[in-house]
Length: 431
Ligand SMILES: C[S@@+](CC[C@H](N)C(=O)[O-])C[C@H]1O[C@@H](n2cnc3c(N)ncnc32)[C@H](O)[C@@H]1O
Ligand code: SF4
Image 1: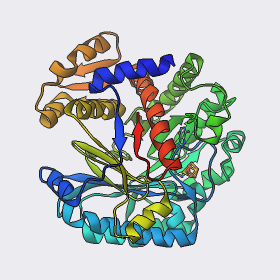
Image 2 (image 1 turned 180 degrees about the vertical axis):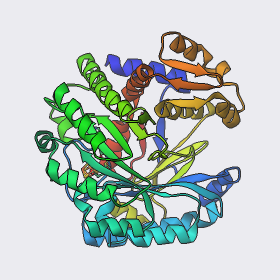
Image 3 (image 1 turned 45 degrees about the horizontal axis):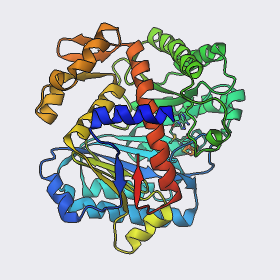
Image 4 (image 1 turned 45 degrees about the vertical axis):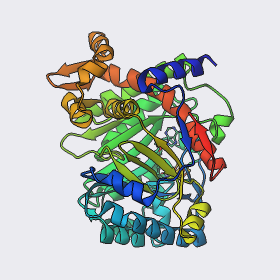
């Protein structure tokens, strides 16, 4: 109750809106063509909504893999690519990320075909980043992944202690995960990232210390460390237990992250976002490397300066929409300038550093005039440093400012994703 009141007040301060309502209005082909007139470059996100099992904590849009729907899904994604073909034209695509669900469920069952169509249609000027599940990374599959052109591979290892793998219901042992990572590291990708979850039930600081050491000893280029968030619409979230905003949970997460930070810094990694640590000199593996992007697939979301929209979450409905000659856009939101600026700031805080002039380039407004009154005190209390024209969050600032962002995003995600999962074509979602 009080949480919601605080959220509404702060949201109003930054966005100028009493409520944010996404509606089932589909932008037309002509409207989108016009929006692309003044866009110079963009990214592509492709969502693969299939997994071999459903993990009890996972908030992402996914369902159990089935070969028949995967085949029709491939055909539908190709139609969506065709829909964007003349809208995007030959504008450079400077970032391409394949996420899920589990993209590697579709190895040898459509993903190669989708990629070929993307590369034949768009002006791809970027590498391929893809998520994968440890159980899919046999030597043969790793060779296939390389031959598809994937240069940056993320592996959802999640834990390196059998006890915690068990709690998370992950279907492999620590030894198997280590062997998989070893195989991937030897394949000469530009970046191998591991996803690692912490602050798990009954996890101790000693276990974090030990896992942190194993992570740096494995020879990977990046580790993304996420504290376990409990989304109310997941099995773990609905089972109750400690609440994510409980102060002791927030402090425990901070202490565990500090242990991991020390391990990574001592091993020559540097912070590349709030939760990620990348070996110095390696380009970071990241889902949002450009400010504007189109999202393909079920639940794919698109952000084009003054509009944000997302596809239906339901894979069968997504497929049906394209089989019936339609698009799959389910909800959209027109963004005022104040909302765009708030969104811009959200992602720059997530990345932990930014150049103030990039705000002026995007909005033709001086950063200090718009946000100076908030940033000056944050600098005074050691949450950030201003290096000339750059703002860099300190380790303390990265954690606390992001904990503050999570206070909003976990709630927004729960409302938007939780409702979209239940109702494929909903009229309105109010955040
Ligand atoms: C789409 S999954 C990764 C790929 C693959 N499906 C897998 O599970 O191996 C993305 C990552 O989000 C993180 N994640 C998922 N649910 C989470 C939660 N409730 N709290 C924190 N991190 C979570 C996990 O680290 C997971 O690897
Ligand atoms: S964590 Fe990965 S494998 Fe598990 S349900 Fe989520 S996307 Fe699927």
